[in-house]
Amino acid sequence: MQIGIVGLPFSGKTTLFQAITRTLLDQAALARQEAHVGVVKVPDRRLGKLAAIFLPKTVVHAVIEFVDVVGLKRGESGSVQFSTNFLSKVRTNDALVQVVRLFADATVPHPDGSIDPLRDISSFETEFILSDLAVLEGRIERIKKQLQKGSDEQGKKELPVLERCHQLLEQEMPLREAEFSTEDQAVLKNYQFLTLKSMLIALNLDETQQPSAEALVRQVARAKQGKQTTVLSFCGRVDMEIAQLSDEEVEAFMAEFGMTELALHLLIRESYSLLGLQPFFTVGEDECRAWTIRKGMTAQEAAGVIHSDFSAKFIRAEVVGYDDFLASGGSFSRAKEAGLWRLEGKEYVVKDGDIVAIRHS
Figure 1 (cartoon, rainbow, N blue to C red):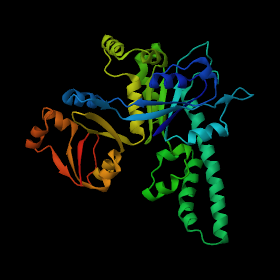
Figure 2 (cartoon, one colour; figure 1 turned 135 degrees about the vertical axis):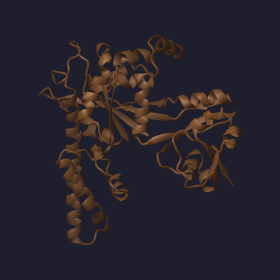
Figure 3 (cartoon, rainbow, N blue to C red; figure 1 turned 135 degrees about the horizontal axis):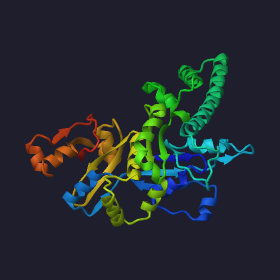
Figure 4 (cartoon, rainbow, N blue to C red; figure 1 turned 90 degrees about the vertical axis):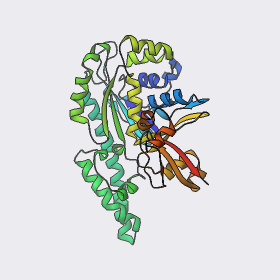
């Protein structure tokens, strides 16, 4: 799963990428107009607690891939140009993080001359809507021409779905905020519509704005939060500095300032959740591991994530919820005695944080 990080020039998107991936790009890398790609661990305290109980040889986190999408430039008029090349790069991502600048810095002027988060968010939204409309209009026209010539069963299925999408976009409604049936989703997944992608809006604050971060997030969320749109904040400069510290130094830093979670960890987890993903765990003396599945997947489908043979030869799944396991003192035998450990069939829908062992032939 791949999440693209986008933002206007000088918004801090590359700073965010470096902080998330704990990398430090040199000037040569920054100068090249090439996407930067990094794989990061999804932080999960539960995996750490399970590892403390089982003391395994290895601990494996769930991971997610972030891409710093490049290509936005100023045009001759001074405004930012959303090139076809940039939009095509964005189209390949599964979800998006839009970095929106709220910090003021006279040495790094905003491309549009002032700080206005709602304007910046709307500029992306407008360009994405126009791009999707262009795709829709071309496809709808081709389907109608094909239907005039003769039978086109696939076109007949697609046409009403695409016409509804066209109507929504003309009303300036991103497709991610609309409800679509399973059948409609099957049609739409072939098009990679930009406004259909889940969006996490990350407000980039400076140190002086951090005390009012919650109020700033609420202000933007009132206007932009939706079914598949989430708003949160981070402080690029501070988080970049924290990312260069060792794990021990990070713990000391958090303890000194009374922090329970880093903003970057929240952003990574929210990005993971935004894709409709969740972890389940397998545990033991050899390995404690978080596996990534889509929400709603069954035990048999989850077994296939571990190994394809586990799905094909699935018999039962031994399951206990993470909270129930800890309430049982971290003991499977006590969980069984309390009726919290159970056997589930192939249709069981795996829950976030389930501890699972697969029985297979």
